[in-house]
Image 1 (tube, rainbow, N blue to C red):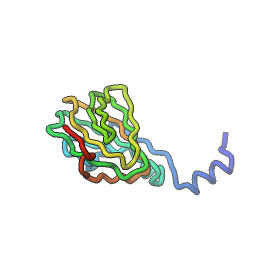
Image 2 (cartoon, rainbow, N blue to C red):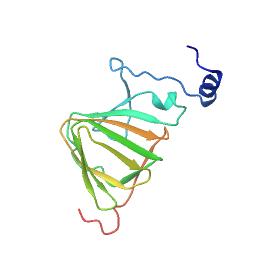
Image 3 (tube, rainbow, N blue to C red):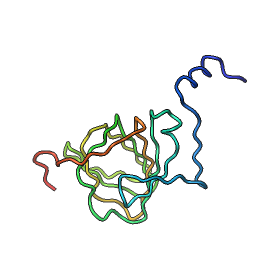
Image 4 (tube, rainbow, N blue to C red):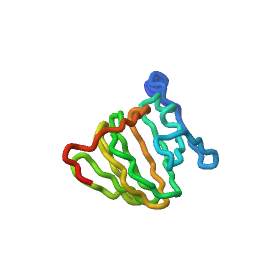
Length: 144
């Protein structure tokens, strides 16, 4: 069954295409944290920059908190494939996100990753495809 002309035209106009990332041929890229490896899933290129997807993996626990920061994006979604991570948020909450859990973090929301399991693997998706990270001060009155 051939796609209708509207669908075919919409795909061409959007610049989007299929991306197939193979586990057997991982594309490793430089990431934000030295204690992670980052596997790019090709989504930023395939979505014409609208979305980014990576798998972050660590075989050693976090040696120290990342420090307070926020991400320059519309939003960041994580799904824990293996292990766990503890995060502090500017509203005073500390959450442990464990294997099988997901979390959406709105863009520009200050947070701090404070602990991880020894081994960890996370699927991270953000919009748009480019995501910056900016260090910042802890929220006013924050006590560790």
